Image 1 (tube, rainbow over the protein chains, first blue to last red):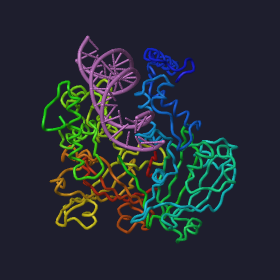
Image 2 (image 1 turned 90 degrees about the vertical axis):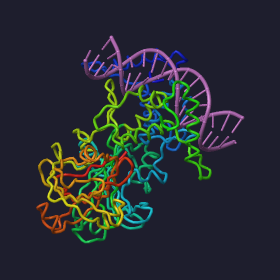
Image 3 (image 1 turned 45 degrees about the vertical axis):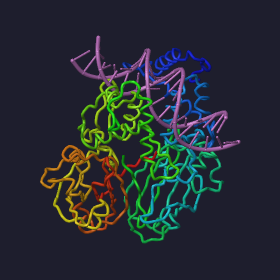
Image 4 (image 1 turned 120 degrees about the horizontal axis):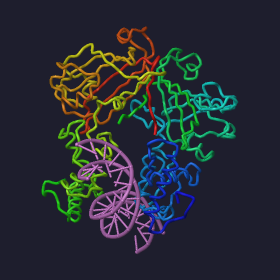
Amino acid sequence: MLDTSFDALPAGGAQRRHEMERSGAGQAGSGRGGAVGFRPLYRQVYDTLLKRLADAVWQPGQILPSEGQLAAELGVSQGTVRKALDALTADSLLVRRQGRGTFVADHDDKQSVFRFFKLRPDGDGTGMPTSRVTAIAEAPASADERGRLDLARAARVVRIERVRLVDARLCVSETISVPASLFPGIAQIELPNTLYSLYAARFGITIATANERLKAVALGAREAGLLEVAEGTPALEIDRVAVDLEERPVEWRLSTCLTQEIHYLSVLR
Amino acid sequence: MLDTSFDALPAGGAQRRHEMERSGAGQAGSGRGGAVGFRPLYRQVYDTLLKRLADAVWQPGQILPSEGQLAAELGVSQGTVRKALDALTADSLLVRRQGRGTFVADHDDKQSVFRFFKLRPDGDGTGMPTSRVTAIAEAPASADERGRLDLARAARVVRIERVRLVDARLCVSETISVPASLFPGIAQIELPNTLYSLYAARFGITIATANERLKAVALGAREAGLLEVAEGTPALEIDRVAVDLEERPVEWRLSTCLTQEIHYLSVLR
DNA sequence: TAGTGGTCTAGACCACCAG
DNA sequence: TGGTGGTCTAGACCACTAG
């Protein structure tokens, strides 16, 4: 139902829908000048479903109700539900399979590992990454961490240090910082290779997008030691902030990558 | 009209449409095993319009016929045309403006410059790039160029060397190779800052996507001289192959970028 | 065979823009 | 005021999957 004031609508939904839109617009637009703040119905359905995903009403991999059921429940037409589901699918939050149903996207399956991992082998090979954690501890957030993660002065973070291998070849060293408040007890957990599926399954946090800033740097003594190459070797530094469904920054990751035998793949559209 | 065998359809298009689909499917599926090769109508409309864009029937910035006109011409419903137009818009080939019309996307306007230029200043600044060509000449394609651009052994290329400035700061040196056959006379033209709008306007070639492979390297003597820094300085190397609407590789660009004051921005979704 | 998503249509109305 | 794209609906049929 998209609004607390009424339940599912039978067939006369059209007229009430427009009242709903206007009332919604009135709320959104109140206090604003000329903008009307029109908000399409399918957008409201999108937000409603997004909220349920953020609240982990449906778990990753789980099937959603059918289009018809959602339409009946929300009091809109099937076409409107479809438009919202298509948008969520385009945002990689759902997966639709003809003849089977609509499912919550799962970061765990083979193909979607590479959604957030852009390092690929130059030649052949699957490029599947593996990881080895070298340190994990809770600490007060540094100034950098507070800035990246939008944290208060007294906030604490859990800091994970690990190295990663691509096709069994050592090439990444990284430090991952997450707010301790959002990931209680994460320092005591055995960490899997794909952290983002752990975030979803264990802490109800779904990574929606990530921003990466890349630079070329010369390796310092410490990183050079971890990656077992000479100090001063050129390396790719990736500064990533990952954002969840509610657009909160929830992870900062600083990676240092050797690119002798791998590269960072970026597709421009 | 999606098929040469008939012209615009009046109202009874539905049944003939399905015949069309089946015949299309039959052609596509002939010789194949189990796959039916079903091709939705809106996909055929998409391909028809894509062909017209590739053939430069409509110029960049120009307005297309309205949805209703296209629907009538092609003998399909307006909703089907809309779905095709929406897909072309999602692929950044069209721009739709409510109340005005649908236009061919233009690489020249301010915001879409950054679609294929991912280097951004670390701090403030517009990050607008400028260029200075240092050399341009036609030559036989090297082995690398033949590989990247899928050229025959005897093919020739035009090679452009230039440096680029971001916010008036020297930070990129690059070599651009294009097949001489596709860009006749380009070596004699005054080159603009945004090459891709020149490709479209002058040679009828629209860049649809580009693949970039990034590595960290140490600058050699030559690049260091061009960029006015010390030899061995770490730099970001971007190896880009740009592809046109017909999915032909039409440009290879090898860029070397200083990243002291800028970074490469990559948004993961 | 039943149920799901995918496609297509026809028609209504709304938001936006320009003359 | 007329034309454009944007939204929404209702209903039909198709393709795919599973029991």
